[in-house]
Image 1 (cartoon, rainbow, N blue to C red):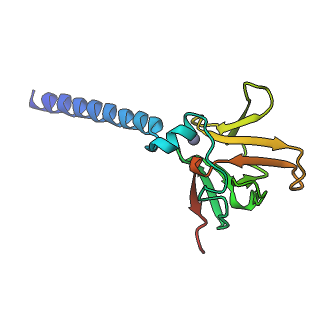
Image 2: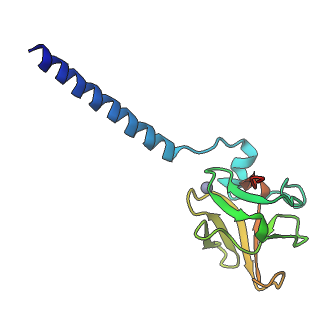
Length: 151
Ligand SMILES: [Zn+2]
């Protein structure tokens, strides 16, 4: 009888810890970085930061630009170029990371994080800045930067 009691206790303990683990996992996938009011106004309110004010406009370090809200990798520094427009510009995104949606007025194409829908900016085609003929015009405040690991 004593052994059976122990066995039941073990099974119960396993069941409870198993449940807690799956709960943890769920919370992690739903967790976003905390945003301040300015970040919220751009990322969730689809606003635009003033040109030439963002921290990544003249940023030339090698690395990866991540979504400010969910940390998804969005752009590589190798695809960044200076369009003299006042916002960080990229002529390519990390495959599948950026979603395109036509604005309500049908004129511009909004770009958002494919993972969490954070507003990034707009994409323009056919301006001839680079050979890819594409300019992702991105708010610095929508991004975080991860420097390339030095070997
Ligand atoms: Zn995101």
